[in-house]
Length: 233
Image (cartoon, rainbow, N blue to C red; front, side, top):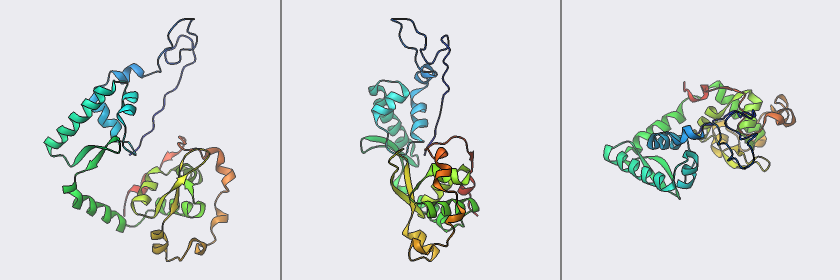
């Protein structure tokens, strides 16, 4: 799960958020929204953040983000975990690999497996096919480059392709640290190909990398969301 947020800064000397223009000896002003975060109810704030993490979140990181003492974070996390267990929820909050993350309970594994396998057998949408073609011809490629080629945000479609086993992570881009993706052996199997060299000659019809370089940084915010890849027909 993932989410991005952003905040505008104000360079006016009288505006809170930047500290620009503070006199000698004055404390820098906190970032805009900082006090609001610290005033949030801790447990709901933790739940909201943990819903969008891609990897286990450490107590130190959560304390920094939510502007609370680490001890308060640790106590709240353990209380949440105990509450979920008592309520018999379908998920756990676990401390794994030094961080906290939500996991489905083992007793519901059959339901989760049924959902995932059903998705694998559904037909891909046009958006998913287009995104898969970009990955196939540009691999290894980051999500932002795929989005730049298609002209829409492809995050949802990329997640669908990952769930179907058609693409996989292939390291990171040296310049930006963005995760790179490539097609899998399962993709070749489904396409009836022995290797990528048997792909049809479609690459000349795709934009060259130089034409999308300016828009290829991870997290480009200017695209319209294309969530049609998550629907299954």
